[in-house]
Each structure stands twice: as C-alpha cells, then as structure tokens.
Image (cartoon, rainbow, N blue to C red):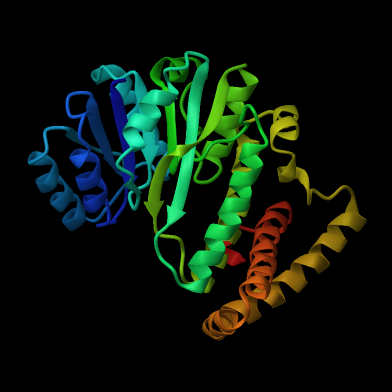
Length: 319
C-alpha cells in the first residue's frame, strides 16, 4: 500500500465533514493516510468548527490559505505534504465528495505500475433532479473522450492523484481561479509522463441542480479559463488547449461579428435566467432525449458567452 496524502480545499462548505468521516473510516489505510484540509477563506464560524473537528482527528491537518481560488489552496496543501509528510502519492478531491470504499486501494493499485505518473477517477452525481442528471450525462460524455486516450492531456482535480516525485518535476498548479487542472494535465503530458483514467477510482458528489446557477458557473468558468493566457506561451496553449482560441477575432470585421454574436447570447442569457425556474419545469416534462438536447444547447450558449466576453474585454461579472 502506498502512503497517500489527500488534499481538500474548502470554503464555507459543511459537506466536508461527511467527506472526511468517509475517508477516515476506510479500513487498511489508517497508518498510511494523511488528510490535509486547506481552508480558503471561510467565515470565522465555519473555520472554528473545522478546527474543532480536526482536533479530534489526528490524521487530519488543517491549514488556512486566504489567497483567492481553490488552486492556490491546493498549492498550500501540496507544499505542506511535500515538506512535512512522508507521502508517496498526493490525491485531490473537492469538499462535497464522498469516496467509495475502494477509492484509496484503487489509487494504490494504479501506482503499482511504475510507468503511471498520475490518474483521474470517475465521479458520480448523487442528486437526481433533471438538471443534475443532465449535468452527469454531459460529464459522462467527457469521460468517454478520456477512454479514447491512452495518455491523458487533461485531469480533473475533483478526483485526481499524482506521485509526489512527479510534482517536484511539474511544479505547482497555476494560481488561477479556473482551468488549473486542465493546464496541469497538459503540463504532465508535455513533460512526457503518463497520466491515465481509472474507472475503479470512484467517488460521489452533488451535481448542480439549479439551472440559473449552473449557467452562471459555465459563463464564469469559460471566461476564467482564459486567465491561462497570462501564464502560458501561446504556442503551448494552441497545442494543448486550442479551444481557448476558438472565438479569437482577427481584425475589425470579425470583432464586430463577434459583438453581434455576443448581443444575441446576452438576450438568450437574459431570457434563460429570468425564466430559469420555468425552464427547469419544462425540461422535467420533456423526454430524457429532448430534455438533454435542450440542456446541452443552453450550457453551450453559456460557455460561448464566457469565451466571447473575454475576447471583447468584458469581465465575467458584467455578463
């Protein structure tokens, strides 16, 4: 069994307690498991409650990182794990994630293959309303793309593990709000190291169940992904993340066309957000096939709105 340190960023999320309870309860890893919780600016009350919990659990270390973003928090956890813990593997989950009974053993078994540098696992949604189910279906399609790749060029920090000696070569996550795992997966691949997908490394979490909140999240994510331009060479991004350039205008005419496209998307956004509750009810009445198709169209428009607003120089908060 490998010695594993699990790093979990958290901000005002009480769901982390059952997530920790589950990790601690897994048998066979008590001596080889460390858990690093990194509070990323929770309220004093939530932080104090987390402190009280961690005092009763010797396996759990609580850090506090006030820098903006979960990747900054993960980096604090990585530094602590590399400097203070004797972990061979660093694993990452989100604060709402409940790992399966075999999650730790699946990670350890994967790294029995010395060629594997990193592994991304499978995530299942536990809430069953139509929006959450369609979000899971969309995620499953992304995973299907993973299965076609012998060496992944992207990872998902919601369910991810990497050898500690690999992190010493790759460095930390970029200090961005969005897209840090996407870029980190590309970096592993560029350095010639093997990152794979494991269907045995399973955890459960809550998918978004409110349409309006989900669409806002997609706009901000796709706008925020472009922060990678500030840290990475254009040639590197064009090779590994070409979708970041899909809506880049060349010249005045293309920028004007992009602006018209933006106005259309803003109108759609206003309509969808204003009537989000009604749209949720409508989707729930449709057949699963038609409902999913309609859901995909709305999510796709939100993603495009985030991309286009970046190239027009608009902050995501104004979209």
